[in-house]
Image (cartoon, rainbow, N blue to C red; front, side, top):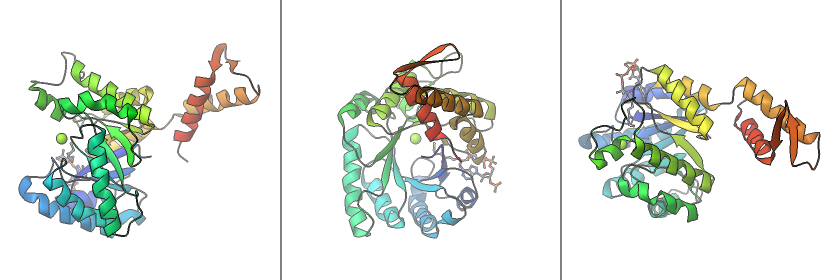
Amino acid sequence: MPRSWLFVPADSAKKLARAAQSEADALILDLEDSVAPASKPEARHAAREFLGSRPRDLRRAQIWVRINPLGPLAFEDLAAVVRGDPDGIVLPKAEGPADIERLGHALDALEARESLAAGSVRILAIATETPRAALRLPQFANAALPRLAGLTWGAEDLSAALGASTNRDAAGHFAQPYLWARTAMLMAAKTLGVEAIETLHADFRDLEGLAATSRAAAAEGFTGRLAIHPDQVGPIHLAFQPSGAELEFARRVIAAFEAAPGAGVVGLDGRMLDIPHLKQARAVIERARP
Ligand code: COA
Ligand code: MG
């Protein structure tokens, strides 16, 4: 699954052209907040054209589309872009599993109309953008959502909805309400077995801050990150792919268990390793790219 998810305002021909050359694992053609209301029809058209031209032979990037929140605009977005066979739809302001199901039903109908394989268009939900959305995160624990590929979160819309003057604390880190929503999102994603995608780093010139916070997110179990500028893609890839040392250690953990068939616990470098360590090591190998 993608490590980097690069937002591209779909009404910008220049940015679409630039995105086609980017190394991002996934592009998110945006029809929501980066596009002014008057430009939505033009943006839909451009997104549809971009999908149709599939500059995909140049790179292996997935192409996703962020639609508007569920409602009349969203259905116009879907009617325009699903015929382009996107890899998936990014749903903003998703308020719990029922919204994912509702989008899924719309996709069922559109896939049939466009003769696309049933269930082929996946969903990435931005799941913390309203207080109601945040409170509904625990509902994902009991949901069965076959189209859902991942969950991600955002602090900007949530702070606006809370009437907060900032979403940061005095030290510049996310304040408690956002960390709580982020953690609940991570738990929901892991319960469902879907990708957990870290939110964007808004200060796009601060590549050091991006790298540090991305490494922290990867260490916590996030599997990729949203990006808003092409320069952010490289640092995100570095953070979300295992380092040489991590890979080497994972291989040694697996070798240690293979050398002791049937054992639930082994020792390596004076440390105890049990089954969770073995699972972790296998996950590291799986995340490695050729
Ligand atoms: N996708 C594709 N190309 C992008 C890009 C993006 N997300 N962001 C910047 N570029 C292009 C610029 O058009 C510029 O191209 P040029 O060299 O041909 O002129 C080049 O990359 C360098 O851009 P830069 O001058 O550093 O930034 P900017 O001031 O042009 O743009 C933003 C800054 C924030 C407006 C821009 O990065 C952007 O639109 N990001 C996405 C915003 C978005 O989608 N938000 C919704 C999700 S929250
Ligand atoms: Mg937003």
